[in-house]
Amino acid sequence: MLFADGGGWGGGPGEVTLTQCYTEGMATVTFDTLKFVERLKAAGVPEAQAKAIAEAQREVFAEALDSSLASHSDLERIERKLIEHDGEFKLIKFMLGMLLGGVVALVLKSFF
Image (tube, rainbow, N blue to C red; front, side, top):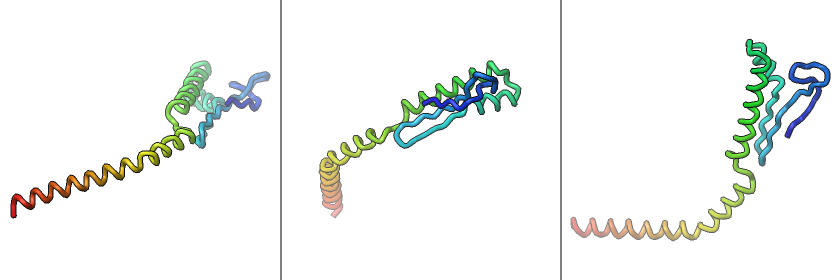
């Protein structure tokens, strides 16, 4: 989502201040590109380079949020799958218990 709130990269007339806000599910990251550019310029970075860095950073945030965050529907799908497989987990747990009991019985039998 792109918000315009007046001003601009350099604050001149007709320019727009850009604040990037990415929302996916419950996670939100707000990135104020104008503030970022101003901070870079204050540190001695040329304005054109500061703008390029800010744009690259915005793209990185967008890509990271699009590709790495699980949405609410993703979590619900995983929860449904875990509930579906709950019976299988119980069966495996039972089988491992029986196997361990058998191994212990064989070890005890061989020593006593």
